[in-house]
Image 1 (spheres, helix red, strand yellow):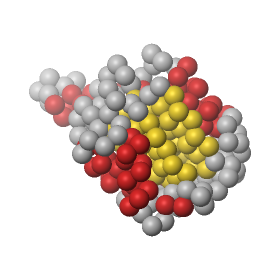
Image 2: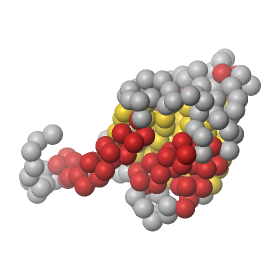
Image 3: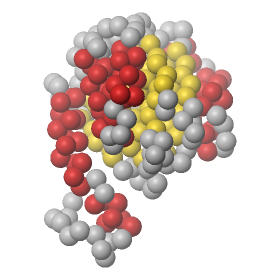
Length: 221
């Protein structure tokens, strides 16, 4: 009951992910990204432990394919898991366990991988990847959100989605973007509205952390 994607901006080196599902607070469980490292998606009977474990494998020098293989080999419940990984150079890999419910699907493109389960159609990930690729030149967060919206427009999952997450990491250990809708009747429009509010202040919070003396003074947040 989840569809998501991992992506990379080749120009800036940023990594990001976007995900939505019918469950509550999906941002706490599915998407994991680290600057200069890559990203991991872990969903369907989700095991959030696989995200940090995958990032450690990537840090150790494993490729996306090697990381997926190691994650699958390390969990006795891999038949329930759906995984996707992107490594530091943008290479991608995914895994569908034998007990992942249909419709399920995956799509790979340059600097993007999209996956989903319990979908209205197995082509939903294709729509997401296509939307991401078609929006080249936009900010990574914008491209990710457009892809998620395209997945919903293509049919999304069976039933209504209720939570959504937009995540981007760039050069720092903290996220450049980490926006979450934890429970809403229409989480993607809510996430879109939240992103439009956050977008003008995107760099301000980085400046406050790295150069507070010269940061633009604003009401503290």
